[in-house]
Image 1 (spheres, rainbow, N blue to C red):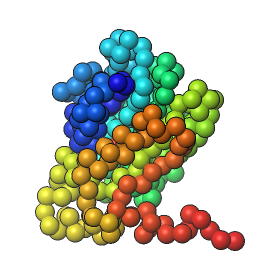
Image 2: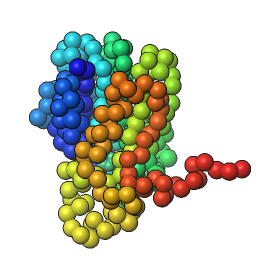
Image 3: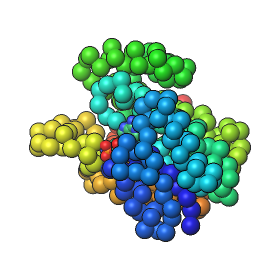
Length: 259
Ligand SMILES: NC(=O)c1ccc[n+]([C@@H]2O[C@H](COP(=O)([O-])OP(=O)(O)OC[C@H]3O[C@@H](n4cnc5c(N)ncnc54)[C@H](O)[C@@H]3O)[C@@H](O)[C@H]2O)c1
């Protein structure tokens, strides 16, 4: 039996992962705004600190895996706070607990939206760790139509995973850190976008998914199960697309250019 901490465990992908891992006989400490073992608001410093304190107390100071799933998709400053700084605080804040495990694993949930246009100023604020500047820029972007806040938060968290995973703090401590990049998954987050046939068609044209179309939260949970398992001892810094082929269609072989 392993002990997991999962943020966003009350709904969608986080909830599906919690159910799958509990059915496997593991212990899961769920973190969320509601309906969770640890109630915490990851949009601010206080909630992030109380999350680390409470997970440490409940777990006895040892975790085998952390799944950082909690996120927002709204075009708002809250998305910048939760998706980048909240996710980073979850992974970095709980990392010392992973050091106590024989087979420690961590997974961040990014998105296929890493491929969508990003905002350079917001990305720079994220990567400088400047939350006040990121929020100020997000408040400007939120006045315009678009997904730049979400796409930038996911792109920068994917970049962070690739930088951090091979470093002394992670690989150096034997912790396998990776990310997943889902396509469109039918969860409460997407309920509005999937509510009408017209919205659905629009989404499907933005995110081509020739293999199976819109997926279920359980499909992503299966991948999270593997990435956080004892068996996954050698993947490091990968961003695994689980998107019905959207990445293969949109980027094709451009990621492996021939000179
Ligand atoms: N559904 C999709 O199509 C899709 C695609 C790509 C990536 N994702 C990512 O997957 C992750 C999970 O999304 P989902 O689709 O399961 O959505 P969801 O809305 O069903 O679940 C998200 C969970 O995160 C929690 N959360 C939000 N803000 C929080 C905060 N401030 N503090 C603590 N918890 C908070 C919510 O309460 C909720 O339980 C997100 O990071 C999302 O960006 C989803």
